[in-house]
Image (cartoon, rainbow, N blue to C red; front, side, top):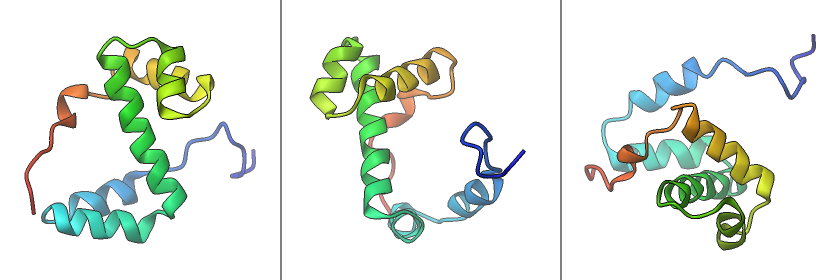
Length: 97
């Protein structure tokens, strides 16, 4: 099986370790900007918005329209929420740097 197979999941442990090593919001923002392209950064922002809107009870179709993404993207977010892979309680502002 090739590493380019879209159905395989890369080992994200080094990424998690690097992000966890950041000592505050400012360092985390710098790390994310260094690791991600502007497009990838926007995709993360969109995913969080999808989770927030779904958690608030908005329909998948309305979320897709509001965020400006495809229904498949919203469905993926919905499945992650249902599987317990995302905790909407952790979407608060958090601590500042």
